[in-house]
Amino acid sequence: MSGTPMKPIRSMLFVPGNKPTWIEKSITSKADALILDLEDSVPPDLKVEARGIVQSKLAWLAEQKQRVFVRINRSPHLYDFDDILAVVSPYVEGIVISKPCGPEDVDCVSRMLTEAEYRNGVALGSTRVIPLLETARALQFAYEIALHERVGAICGATAKNADVARALGYVWTPGGRESEYLKSRAVMAARAAGKLPIGGVWQQVHDLEGLKKAALLDRNLGMTGELVLHPSNVADINEVYSPTPEQVAFYEGMIAALEQAQAQGRASTIYDGEHIDIAHVKTAREIIELAKSFNA
Image 1 (cartoon, rainbow, N blue to C red):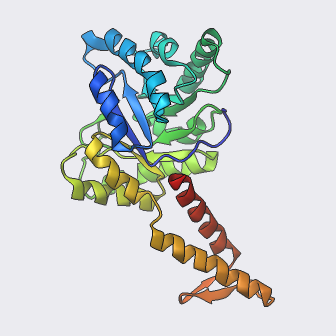
Image 2: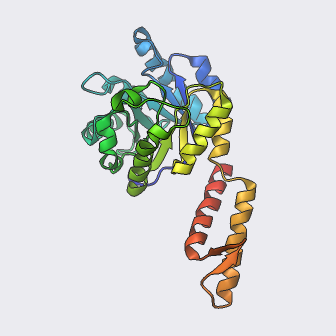
Image 3: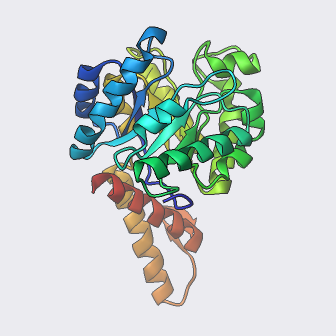
């Protein structure tokens, strides 16, 4: 339902919409969500065919308990209503939109979704929107975009020589210093609006060491998950964004330590050499709940 928090996502795997066997095999990657792509990964002359393939696979993916989003096409001035009308269904959690110029583009897509939901007998307002912040103006208005009730997450993703790099004119480096500010801007906007901040994208898909370093940087900045380009990358991304058993045990111990202190009439205590109080325990409880959500 729009306006309610979206269930956390660690990994969102892009799958070309014109590849039916790839779509079927993608569920073995264990990605939290798939993005069936009708846009950049599909050749122009196969767009209509890809739309039909994606539409035909949605019910099957739902049977596999796979969360699904679809990235739709856009013309220079408008998103593709035919794409929207074809995929809006109870089987699709939301759509991904590329290169919005600002919140007005999300408003436009939302109206198109409402019409498609009405025509297709889907609950009005139930289809999420995930904007990829790939223009300078979208990054400037990240918070206003995130505030829209349909938006469940915003993507402050960066990739070598891709749309964001071109829009901002930065030079990509493996260390990622040049994109830390824009990613932090996306994180703050998403968090302030109560939405998920999604990072990525690692293009050198066979460099798993580099992938993990980049994902850890995004995680340290506050991202909750990543866009993923190749099934082989999913396991590492899921690991980076999942609390480890050791971390869960540490935070369970922290909760127990404060509860013991409170039973003795104190509001704080020393745990594992650190001063803790109720604020730290709130963080501990959130991390434990996050771990439970991924293991459910």
